[in-house]
Structure formats: C-alpha cells, structure tokens
Length: 123
Image 1: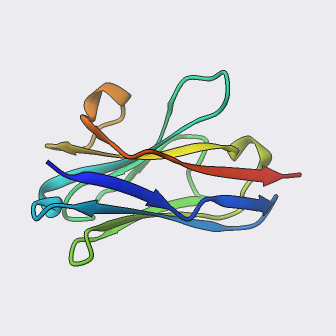
Image 2 (image 1 turned 90 degrees about the horizontal axis):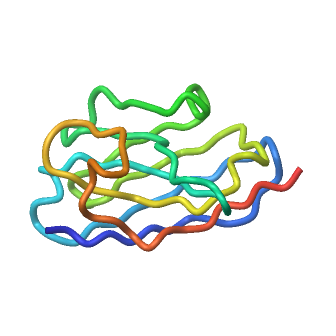
C-alpha cells in the first residue's frame, strides 16, 4: 500500500496558477490509479481529476475541465495537478488519493488518502 503526501498549495489571486504535487511511497505506485479531490468548508468532498497508471485518458470534474490538468511521473512516484485560471470557488483543501484498478470518480472508490493541502484563491 502507498502513502501519500501533498504539497504545493497556497494563496493565489484569481486568474493565477498553482501546481500541486502528491508524492507516494512504495514500489508499486505505478500500479495505482490516482485521483484528486477537494473539499471546501461546509461542503462535501468533490471529485476533481483522475488518471490511470499509464497516464492516459485522464478524467475531470465539470467545474475544472479546461483549466486543470492531471499528470503523473511513475519514475518519481508523483502525481501532479496543474491548476490554471483559478477562481475563488476553487478555494478548498485538495486531497490526493490512490486506488487499485481503473479510474474512479467517487470518494468511496479510493482507499488511500493524503493529508491534504490548502488552496486559497483571492478575488
């Protein structure tokens, strides 16, 4: 089983960009589908993006399509979330997650989670 540590969050102005990273421990990282979720205060955790072990066929939540890009580097045991054209409504804690098998869009699809990194977008 992998362990996940997110980094790269911070405060950014609307229209700006951030890149989140999720570093995984374990030799079997390349076998896992990876996902990003986010949770704003008082709201449910929301699907952001997912990518399979090959890095092909990523999938995105409707609210981030065209602005966010998920990618992975299996040699570095890391998955990334490039966030462009950020909006105040993107403000949330962002979580990295891992699962065996194909892409997952639900929180319950994933069994391993990081501790989260905060992204705050000011207007």
